[in-house]
Length: 133
Length: 109
Image (cartoon, each protein chain N blue to C red):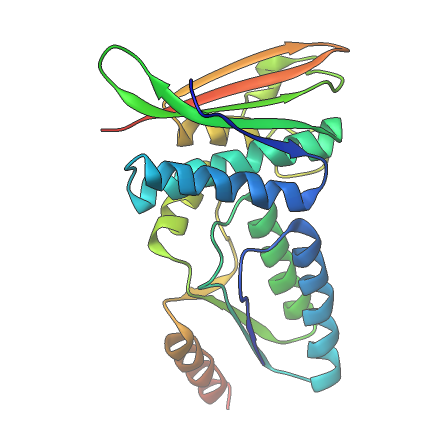
């Protein structure tokens, strides 16, 4: 991952900044308008989770590469209270904040790769990737 | 009444829009409301929930809301995310939205 854009997330305005940065990088990398909108939507959800549950954190956006492919990598991290029940958090319709609760399963559907690392009391890091076709 | 979203909206903007729309419907005694979201970059869970609430509140005031101009890539992302704008009328663009409301009022006499 090179040329990483780091967007500090402290308020709802930062959610818009993060998703717009993500969208322009996606377009720059050659993703279609549709895929770029999917990526921007996923970033918006992750950034909102930070604002809602952890108050502050960061979203890092960069390129992803492996032996055969190029794509986009987004890492959303916070030092919030972590997720106590990961299995439940990944179920459609579950939420502890009174929101729709589609956040994480929805993000997983929008992207190709989805990894969640959470430590109760220490924070959460969500890593997502989407590869170019 | 027609409301046009001019750019990407923050959560605060959306909450403000919700309040302003409902207040305006009360003051102007509107029967039909069109919200044009052509300029919205994406519709995530918060944006869709807020717009659905606007439509529900306006319905409780006896008026009808039509959301117009959801861009194809935005619609695609909404479906993937699992968002439905259930109970909210949507139309392709402003013209179709107005047509829908005109038909509706005509049939209601």
